[in-house]
View: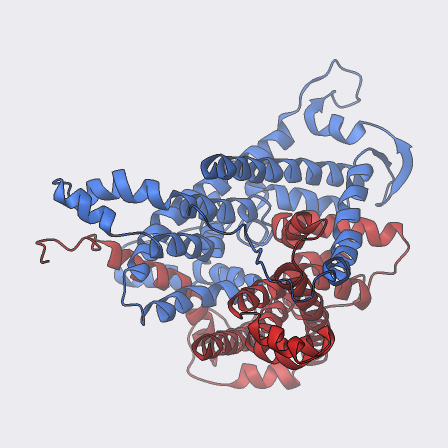
Amino acid sequence: MARHTDLRRFTGFRGLTILCLVLLYAPLVIVAVYSFNDSASITRWGGFSGKWYVDVFTGPESPKFRQAAVNSFVIAIGAATCATIIATAAAVAMHRTGRFRGKGASIALINLPLMVPEIVTAVASLIFFITIGFTTGLLTIFIAHLVFCIPFAYLPISARMQSVPDMYEQAAMDLYATPWEAFRLVLLPLMIPGILSGFLLAFIISLDDFLITNFVKGAGIETLPTAIFGSVKQGIKPNIMAISTLLLGVSVVFVTLSWLIGRAGQSRT
Amino acid sequence: MAGAAPQGASRSEVYRGNGPRLMLPTWVFIGIFLVLPVGLMAIYSFLTKEFRGGVIWEFTWAAYDQFFLDRGLFGDEPPSIEWTYIGIFWRSIWQAGLATVLCLLIGFPTAWFIATREASARPVWLFLVTIPYWVNLLIRTVSMKFLIRDNGPLNEFLLWTGVISDPLSLINTNFAVQLGLFYSYLPFMVLPIYSAVERYDFALSEAAADLYSDNWTTLRLVILPVVKPGIVAGCILVFVPSLGAFLAPDLLGGAKTFMIGSLIEEQFKGAAGNWPFGAAAAMILLSIVMAVLLLHARAQSKEAS
């Protein structure tokens, strides 16, 4: 049936979409471009150069940022790994065990870290650690990150588990597999794309966090975001733009990986 | 949406009886390290402040009193309403509300445009909108600061084109904070609206067109009411984090653009630290957010029944 007007088309929507993408990307692209500026002043363009990237790894501030990067990655890997395991167990409980007491409350609990404003979580965590006498440091950052990583790991894992029918596990158990064997040998391999996506998202979320980390980190311990924040407070320097561009690259690579894995997983079922 | 299974619940019972055991780690970690701390924070808001941070375990209303009431410089005048902190909350609500409206104005057309592409092209468009969301918020805010500085690329560009003759002073203004909030949370608006539009049945638009409705009238009278749940979800996802935002007001704003996030942070980090007052301000923020979420949940369940 031919119509005179396309029902899906609204004048200006394409333009606004382009505007939306330009707004989202322009600041990032400009900082990435200026990170290759040869000039020591961040204002004037002095020609193309990779010297600020060299400065990031060998310059006077490099030991500080290297330590911060190590802290960030250790915490992100640890928190994302633990959050993924906890979230996988939670997803099995939600989708494979029928009804149990507290199931409804459990959904709310998993989503709670997404609902409480970050600044509130930060304040509450600081108060809690101080009150129970924990010395703030790497361990407190790790615990705080683990908590808010759980819902981010849970989302893709849960979505994936819903799309995997349980007939394979049923078949395995008909053939005398124990529940643990059915999970480990049948469900887990089918879940790999969801689990990887969940891990990668949790990893990025942990790597990203500034506010909560800033509250629970304790004196002298920095992650990349808190180190960058401290430096930016004294003005934006070219080496900060180089570090930011590197971190931006890491995020883009991980999100793209997570996305591709998710798509590959979808097309296989 | 009639007949849809309850959220996140599926029927399978392969591992029946193991539910509580598998859920235990979640309960332990979120329970001990989030629910308990928030409860403790509520208690702290009623304790006496210790100078240089910390608290004395003596019950008092002092924090809430200081928030809402003005008792003069020496605390001996008859109480009147203290507008300083209410004003900061009001500015935060106003800024978060404006950011929500602006995000909606750009986010809805974007979501619509993406959802009406070919099915194979949609994931790519969507991915383009999602990437900035996963890029470090601090880096995005710093980038915005770099862009709009007095002698930053935006001013250079505008001077070069001759649109302006003197650099615009944007940093430290409410406008800069607004730009930062809008920029930070724009992707949150697009995603839920997109999934609502994707489920929209275009037979409704056909029916409206058969009855001589033009596209814009159909948008107003048919499409918007149908995709409203997605719009409301997007608005909440932008409003809630904007309200408690710290980075945008702190890096792009100044003393005159103070928002809740900075007020709370200052109580725990600054020299003038007052933990019970910070805890009280955080409790008030949390109450506002929970009220918004509860209203939303109630409206949803009412619509479902």
